[in-house]
Length: 190
Image 1 (cartoon, one colour):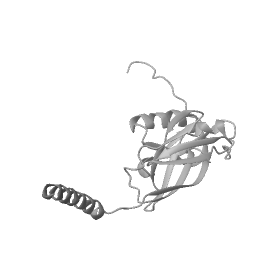
Image 2 (cartoon, helix red, strand yellow):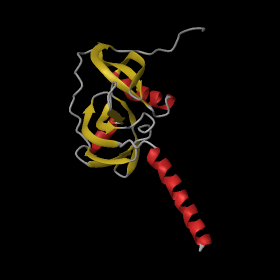
Image 3 (cartoon, one colour):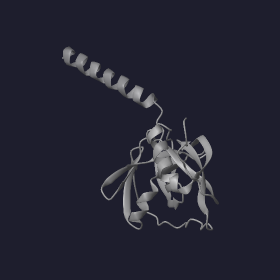
C-alpha cells in the first residue's frame, strides 16, 4: 500500500509542477479581424486588419488564395497602432468580385477581390504619366521617393520585390504628366 501511495504522490507532484509553470506563463489573447479590402492605384490590393497581441514576426508570412493559387502578402503595422496593413499584387483585380481566402498569423480570413476604381489620368500629346513611388518593408519606409514613368512601374515593383525577397511593397504616392523618357545607346567610343 505504501508503494502505491508513493507512486500516487509522485504523480500528483509532477502534475502540480507542470500546471504551476503553465499557469505562471502569461497568456495574451491574439486576434485578427479583416476590416477592409480595396484596390489602390499603384499599390495593389490593400487589406486592413484590426489585431490584438500580434507581433511583427506573427505577420511576416501571410498568404491569399485566389483561383486556387497562393499569393504572398507583404504586411506591416500601420503607424504605431495594432492595425495591420497587407498588400497583394494589384493584377489580381482581373478576378474582381470573386471570393478569396487567406491566412495571416494562424488566422483564416475571407473577402471579395475589389474592382479597379481609380483610372489613370490622361496626359496630353508628347507627355506620359509619371508616378512618384516609395518602398516600404513591413509598413516602414525604406527607400524613396522616386519618380519613374508609369509604364516601368510593374518592372520596378518586380525588381524591388526580388531584392527584398517579397517582403517589400512599392507604393505610388503621386502621379503627374511629364516628358517621355527616351533611352538611347551611347554614340562613339566609350
